[in-house]
Length: 117
Image: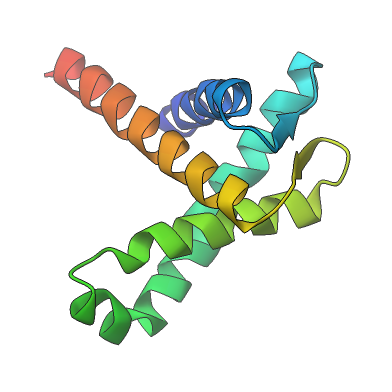
């Protein structure tokens, strides 16, 4: 159940990011948005922890700010896996998109987690 909630939060965050970030476009088909969110969630669950582990020195030196670059890479990886479903025009679109997705996800997860307690 938690994974489904995470996918829905990711879908909403991706949709909002595509609305406000120039150069980040996502298919208007809701099924495509959910597929992108599902793949993005899988990448964040499987690949991201491995990348973070090997990036520990950079995370320490940058006081955690390197996480933004990792999030950007995870979004870019999702785009490469799903061409036509989601597209980016460049690094900055990916960077700002990843930032917006992260902020929205953190806020929504905090709201949902506080409701469960």
